[in-house]
Image (cartoon, rainbow, N blue to C red; front, side, top):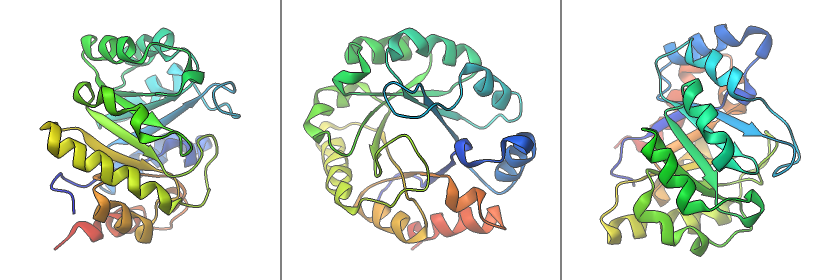
Length: 224
């Protein structure tokens, strides 16, 4: 199991946008550690979500860390707007389709005083992120193909989670290992056992009747 604190990050994409302030208040009261915000541009992924204005709105609703995942082309160009909107952490993609210099983007995010993260799609080999591991605060392993919520968890991605954990140890690094996609109590247990410590969950929290119980159920595998 991970030696890092287990963090639960409800994904705002699954919230009720007609009552966004209420949903944010409820997950904060229920014990969320971060809020996860998925930014999709309809180019890098085949869906469109929201932009810096929504991040700024959420920032005004809570002091919790905002974990912003840029599933977009040219994250180097757009990251400053999300940092200005109140993001505490910006995660970008390693794939060439994202059309940026990964090392330069990560450096610019960190220089702006924001945590920087790197992620990869299920089809991308973990080797693609390895050169950057000494320079990141977070590694996000996608456990579904990004772009749409409600997909089934891909257990085969646990090999990448273990690799991220093992390299963190061998490098003497301290990045968080995050998983996103199909996270519910059973899959959270599997992810934690393999080394993940940050759990992004949308449907399993926002569709639950009791947010506090849903968040607790994700954390329970971490208890001795």
